[in-house]
Image (cartoon, rainbow, N blue to C red):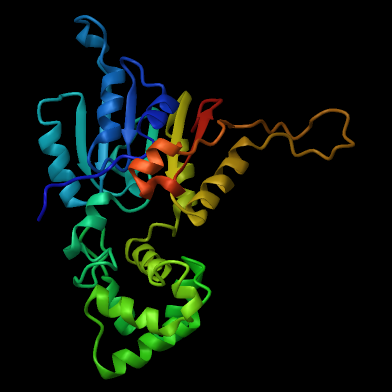
Length: 315
């Protein structure tokens, strides 16, 4: 197993969005290699020797490889608490905690993509795994047990794969001959199931692999509820910053933003508001990676940072 390595996207922009201050309490809900955690740590460190003003950072990740790397990286930093778990369960893992800032970097890590045996990449032969937490159902189990309609639904709903039906049928035909076991085997089946023109647009397995990854890890199911629950753990003035990497993740954050920033719902003809509804959040302008970052890390090209600030006490 290679040393854990993750190229942090929108590093400074995310930390600036959260405005870490000495004495603050922050959650890095997808800590990965600790890049964002490290920058937040600098922000909560007080000037001089006023250690009473040192804040707290909770570095959370579901991947055991990440937890091992974070433990090594921050072993001498008492302000950092490392927890293995999914940010979906942050409220249960940290009951009663209130945050000045929460950061989520959605998607798969560089380490997971670049470690062939994890099975996330279609570029190298490996077992069809794709589990972030290394527990639960594998991609191999999904493609070898689900029926055609279920596979088609996963490919379309979770990745908008326009050839979902053809790919699902090709998988069913192949597994009648032998079970699908490796990433390259699945990638070849997908490539053979789609038109040649589609193959010229980029690797044809990209969306199918993404859909299977989402299905294995439950990344989209309940995402809006998880984001909303995390927002309600913010202190007044606290911020939730979320980095997304595709339209489905971004759409979930946009829907949460729309609900939390909505104000009065009275009909426009009413002279005064009688519903009493006020916005709970203020949205910051989305931030995209610049040309320099995209050049240095092409995987960042689809990243988008959205940030919400809590306007009132949450409950």
